[in-house]
Image (cartoon, rainbow, N blue to C red; front, side, top):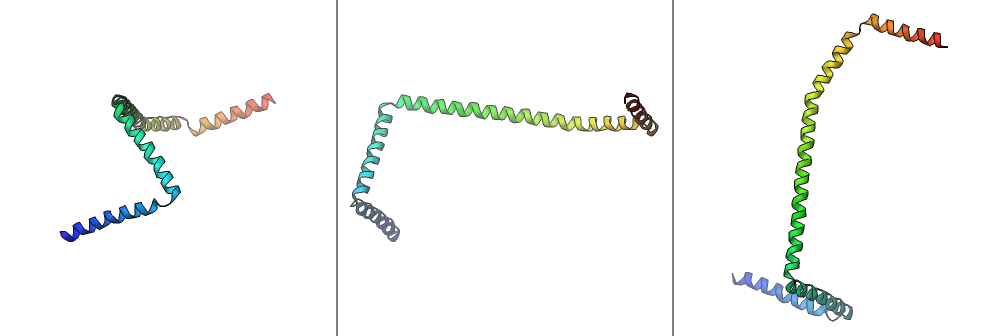
Length: 123
């Protein structure tokens, strides 16, 4: 166990040393300073206004809940419509077959002659 603790201790010391060395660069120090200031101002705002943060979190949670309910309703509606189409398709197919069977070949020829004859009379 001592070696494991030594490893993590060495990692921590190495990270601290690397961070300290990187702060020797002036630009890095400036960026870090700005970052710390932004973070500390945000933390201060949260600490001073916990009610506002709580309200925002509740509002966001409510919006997510409403959106999830809407999606659930939409999926249910679509599923119902797909089921209706599945039930309706065989019925439509059967009606088309019956309609096709209702027309005999002679009736089709007669209809074609009537259409041809009407076209000749109109010209």
